[in-house]
Image 1 (cartoon, protein in one colour):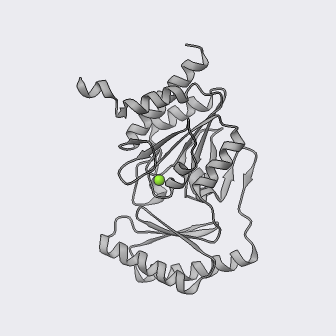
Image 2 (cartoon, rainbow, N blue to C red):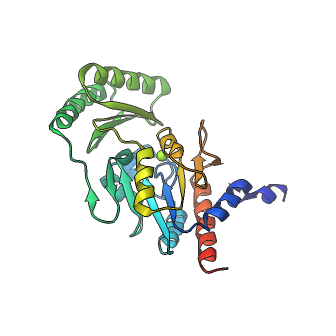
Image 3 (cartoon, rainbow, N blue to C red):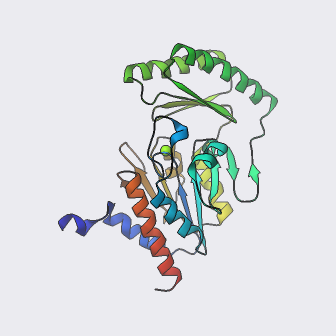
Length: 269
Ligand SMILES: [Mg+2]
């Protein structure tokens, strides 16, 4: 009983309070990372699926007036659309903010000739790295490549990531690198989830936003939040977020609480 006084099915009291006040905002935007937040982490990215309880809460939220839901992922838009199972009306942002589907047609990436050349060189470099580390997995994206090391022995994983950094750094110009959980990623365009959140705020005319993420790249999104917004780090690790949840099951609970608070507010209950 003492636990339950502070925690509602894994959602801590201070977060419940923050959700209650967020639910009362005029124009609410709920932005969510996908992997590790909606979907449990899996070894093969194509196997990832949203927790059905989170999908249900998202379906409830998108039907409410003055309420927008967006997924903000490092995945390509195509991959995010394929695995997320998100209902109609959910906005999708892929490639850390380099690709958008904001419900008015897809905004793809138009690479310059220089970026296209860099992408070709990047593909060549990563292919050679992957051939030296056969357990690693290459994921091609419209503006870059990710090299996944999940499931590998930790020493082999760091050796693979070092090899990738070194090989790309030595042979390709104009590439930015970012490291995440069991992944190192190279991009020929610069985009961050922070920029994605700023664009989302303008696009949805949000008066308050929620962002939940589990990885290093999500810190850019947390940093772009403003007073009155709600930031939720999922899982362990240093963060600028003000709230923390244990995992995807608790995220589902949080979304259920928010959908219910929001509906009650809109009904004047
Ligand atoms: Mg994630």
